[in-house]
Length: 129
Image (cartoon, rainbow, N blue to C red; front, side, top):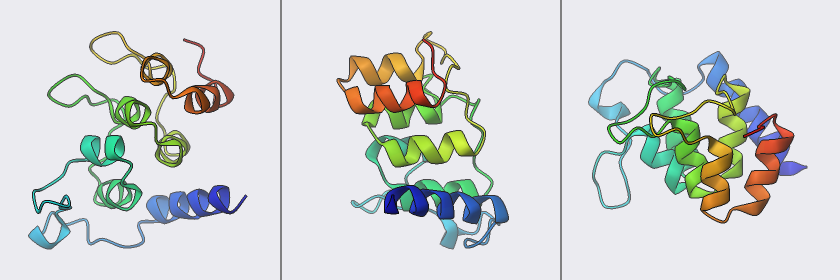
């Protein structure tokens, strides 16, 4: 219950634009643990909810735009097995049935990666393939 409330509160923060200047200022760059810049795909796959939120707040959130490898943000979150990020992305417009450039859906990626609970969550969120 607490996690659901937390994710819902974070989704509200994204929608209302709380936090982050969104200007593209260097201070807005999200850094990985090794000090390198991280993009939303990496943040989502690694389960970094705070960084994912920050990118979304900065306006660098397009659920339909794949990265250089063809991975969509929601597919990256599914690949990493990150249910909180999956819920957040779906609450903010990601399509649970959208295929990436390789034809994979978030559900198929979660299943291939062995994330059974996440696959069930995706089905509950409307995933059919």
